[in-house]
Image (tube, rainbow, N blue to C red):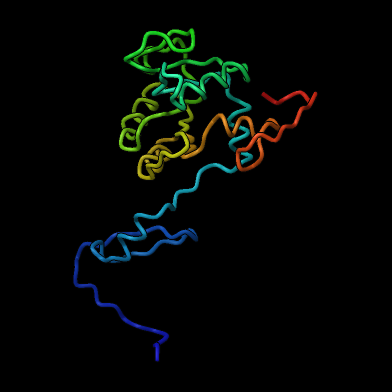
Length: 199
């Protein structure tokens, strides 16, 4: 028989607060298996689809941090798409390149000729905290971390510092989806339309 109420005696003095998926939080011993499991799960939620659309509509310039001159890299593909399918001013940031897709490459965000509206990041998850600091120093308002990259602590810190954060989403896929070129799952819809796109 399972009791409907119980008392748990906490012998470990180090407690941690974990955020649950339903928005509630609770405190438990930091060394407990449950605390470790909950801490490892994704609980951060980024902007809604409407808010992501608003971000893309309002932006005039995008800096791609971690841009690569290698045509096989996803950042190259995204850069190509943005050059050809949008009117954003695109800046490529890579300290090891001088030119990407026919444009000058910049060593860092501080070297750009303007403060970008969106900083699109192609760096590994462990690098995101340092990129957040660079974005904050640059004065940019939005950091967009590409699909497959997740650093929840960095996202939460960035938001606490006033940044808008999009994470684990492809900017190219999102832009194309909002403009009728992709199914919700990211597939080409084959739709041909004369409708004027929003950006």
